[in-house]
Image (cartoon, rainbow, N blue to C red):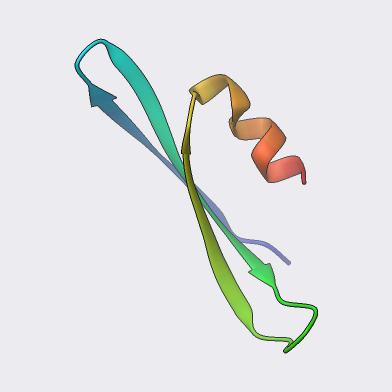
Length: 49
C-alpha cells in the first residue's frame, strides 16, 4: 500500500514537481518515504514503479 502526494514548484522559467511516495521496505517491513524532484511529465512513471 503506497501513499502519494505531489507539489508543484516553480524556479525561474523551469517548472518542477516534488513527488513523495511511501513504500514498504522489504528488508525491515517498515514504511519509508521516497522523495524526488522532477519534470511534471515524469510523475506518473515515478508512481508506477
